[in-house]
Length: 144
Image 1: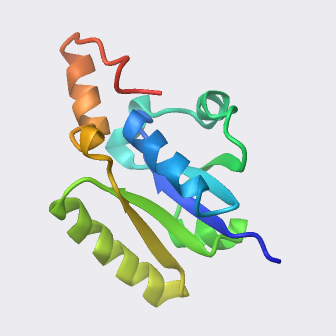
Image 2 (image 1 turned 135 degrees about the vertical axis):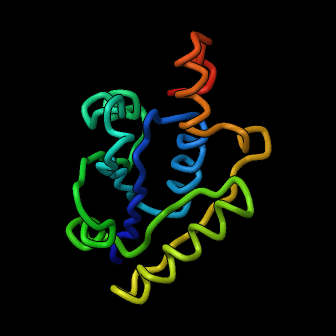
């Protein structure tokens, strides 16, 4: 039987407990999840490195981490992923992700699996963590 491989793309700047929750839940659906840290212009200055994230996720079986500078669907094709894994916290996230899912499916036939955030984590975002950190707040409860 063929392995079910999903690609979990993001800027992960930083990788939050919300991202970890989506990843762990995705591992229950897929045999392997490839976490792809994408290069995203202004967000790149303090993003989590692939080596750092590999170390933080080493306890999870079935996870690979890589960096990618290009279209997400091209990364999915490169690693043999049949699905994209994404998390949504709100209706606004859903609308954005649905549009991406539509174009990715149109381009390659790859489907996107959207997992909703756990209610207790719905307010956690990388941009919120970056802002709190910028103003000197402890963010250790929100990041991996």
